[in-house]
Every structure is written in structure tokens, then in C-alpha cells.
Image (cartoon, rainbow, N blue to C red; front, side, top):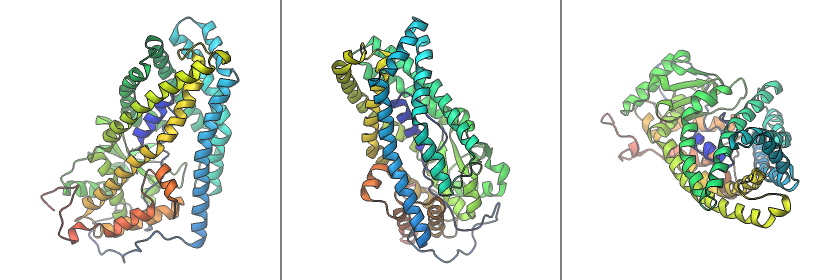
Length: 452
């Protein structure tokens, strides 16, 4: 339920490789009601108001806490493992061997990249595979959150590696061409080049990357009546999101978790709702879900987050420039690296940028939390006047999200600060229960319509 693609593209660009582009974001919605595909008007008596707290049974709470703690640990372990892999490829001279192979293959930079980058990324990926398998397959099955078989999981891993190789080769070619032409300002020029590259990735994601991992169907083909309700809700606020840009994603082939998201830029922009979400919610909860995503869409969160993150990465690239130059100057000669423009410097650059992106995580997460809260507010406002009780519908959705996806009932302030790209569920439920400007005679802040 978020504009995650911007952050994904930027972080992957910073490490000179685009990873698995399939959505892997923490789910944010759900509903405790049985599925009601194509139900009629939502202006029906609302059920009894749910509790304005995120509550779990003792057994489910223990599972949610255990799962969350493992995820936190694996995140920090993953950063350490990635840094360790790059350090090994540098200090053990592995990257130097690959560089020599590339030099012997051709005198042309691009052809050298075609040799060096695939070998480098395959080796780095294989070294990281055990942790990926444990975190992405073993743990998900242990907590009964995945429906994906091992063959399918390995297929996705292989497709992700293929995307890594294609994009990593292009980015490494650009990076080393820039470094060799401007040893003092490569950080700035590479940042400039990164802007159109990331924009292209964001625009192409719905057409090129997402279909590699999931199947998409226009929602009006599977849920025509529901699509009518969505259009009615949006039109009620004077908003226009074409029916052709609302999709259902077949997530159930791989996961039991619930989610929805927005992706793309310009003509490729779209709202995507997982089929697992559609199966777990009633019409009102579905409309709140889509209303949240419509907020990202209408409020231009993807381009805004892109702009903010790019400014952040300008600073990170400069810090990377300083750190990489110092490391190469101090240790380059002893490890056979001739300069930053040498292919063998790639693990140093990736090591530095891995650490810098990790340290920038609180800033990136904070930006995302702000936009997610704004989307929650937009969803409530756009549903007002269409859904009988938008507050209750959103509370039901968020409550079931926690139950289905084992969301942490009590994340620590540090974990929230460092990792949470959504406000914790407890905070979101409290907001859903109390944000009622229409009941207080106050104007809506984000949705403006003459009909309201």
C-alpha cells in the first residue's frame, strides 16, 4: 500500500544493480469480512464499530512478535552479509581476477562490462543465496505466509538475477565511463545520469518488470461491479482514474499476505490490488483500500518521493565519492586496484554505498511514513459520503491485515524510526477511529468536491 517503487529504483541504482522488481512491500490492508465480489451499494447499515485498537489473540500475538523479530534481525544481517560479500570480493582479489578476464576479452569498455559485470553479479548473488533462501522461502513457509513452491521461488530468483545483470551491466558501463572522464566530479555527473535512468525504470516497471513475477488482469474483467463502485467513489470527489488503470494481481499463487500499491509514471501509472486482498475484504474495505492507493495516485506521491530521494542521493553520491577515493588511495595499490576507474574498484564502491544507503534508511523510511499517513487520510476523505462508515471499514481492514500478515503489535521506537515505511498499525487504527472532520463541521483537507 505504498509508493515503494521510487525508493526501490533509487536504492538499486545506488548499488549499481536493479534487483528483483516484484513488489515485496509490507502489506497494509485487509478485512475481517467474507469476500463479497461485486456486492451492491455500500450505503447499507454499518456493522458494530470495531475496537479502535490493534488486538490479537495470545497465540497470534506471539506469532506476530516472533515473525517480526526475525524479519528485523534478517534485515540487519542482510546488510552485514552484503557488506561482507563486497569486502571479500575486494580483499580476496576476486574482482581483480574478473577484471583481468575482461581486459583480455576486449579493449572496449562496454564489451569489458559484458564480461566483468555478469560474472561479478553471479558470484555475489550465489554468495548471498543462502540468506535469501532462508529469509524469503524458509521463514515465509515456517509462518505459513507463502504458497510458493521451491521451483517457482528459484525461478523468481533467477529472473531477478537476470534483471540484475542487464541493468547492472548498463549502469556499470555508464559509471566507469563517467569516472574515467571526470575523476573529480564523477559523483555529480553520475547523479545527473541517474535521474533519467530511474525515471525510465519507474515508467517501465508495470510493463517490463512486474509481469516477470506476477500476472495482472484489469479489475473490471474480474470485478466489474466493484469497479463501478470504485469509479462512483472517485467521481464523488471529482477524481478521475481510468478503469483501465486499476488492476488485480494474482498474488495468491505465491503468498497469503495482503497488499495493494501504485506503480508507474505518466501513461504507465496504475493502481494494483492483490487478489488475496480482494478475497479477504468486503466492498467497503475494498473501497478504503483503493481510496488509499488513489491518494498516492492523485497526490503524486511517486514523483514527490522520487524528487526527495534524488536530492538525498546527491548527498550520498558525494559522500560515496569521498569514501571510495580515500579507500582506493589507501588500499588500492596493496590490493591491485589502479584507481577508481578500475573495474576491481566495484566492490569498494558497492561496499561504501551499501553502508551509506543503510545509514540513510531512517530518512527514506520517514518520507514514506509521511506519505502513507497522508494516503490514509485521503482514503477516509474520499470514501466519506459513499461508504456508510469509512472509519469502521478502515479499522476492520487494518485489523485483519495484522492478523493475516503477522504485523508487529508493538514495534520499538528504534525499529519504527529505522525500518517502518508505514506508521505502525496501532497508530493507523487510532487515526482511522478519530479522524472524522465531517462530524466536527470541519472541511476536508485533501479531497475537495462540490458534492461534499
